[in-house]
Image (cartoon, rainbow, N blue to C red; front, side):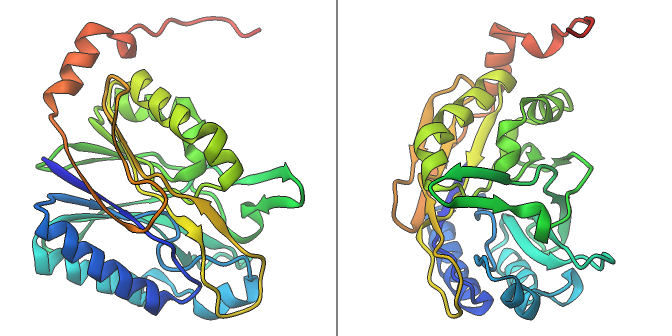
Length: 277
């Protein structure tokens, strides 16, 4: 199968971002992609909470989701919408950070709400409190498709090996990790964590990423993301690195490599009970 990683610099305007994704999806289709992957926060990147409240919609009325479902059906491809910010209907007003897997008819095959919230203080004034605006999910998701069995994660989930292990033990051959990684953490940890998750699970890891400085139409802190969308083999080899610019990166996957990696090192069946420290 052939996968495409869509790397973009999403702005705070959902309409502009949808137009950019339509164009890149067409490029991926022209390149023969069977599965197209977009990054986290594909519809809106902003730290302005008032702007989020103004432009984000519930799932049923979200124009980005509807438009991308149209694109999947138009081209007859599987499409991973890395994540969308959506109104959740929660009483406290927090949004959902939700990933979708769309089938070639445009139907929603599965969705996943990000479990682990990015609440960190990186130093030099850079801090994030994702849980203040988004409520966490509580359900891991693996999807059977004609292409492969696919596990869903989002960005900060990458740091939680037990989630990836659970997906692999449920049969995931590919784990998706759409992201909007910061520059400091991307420089230090992005590649090594993705390679570790692939090695530990014996799965392909596909991580479509946001990149660069994100355009703004309203006031708010500047957002800059790391880029370097990666495809990693079950043995931990980097198959593709998208670098720092927006664009489409194609990579061919041989799923026989999943079985081979797990045969050579069957760690997924070697769990043993133990008492805690």
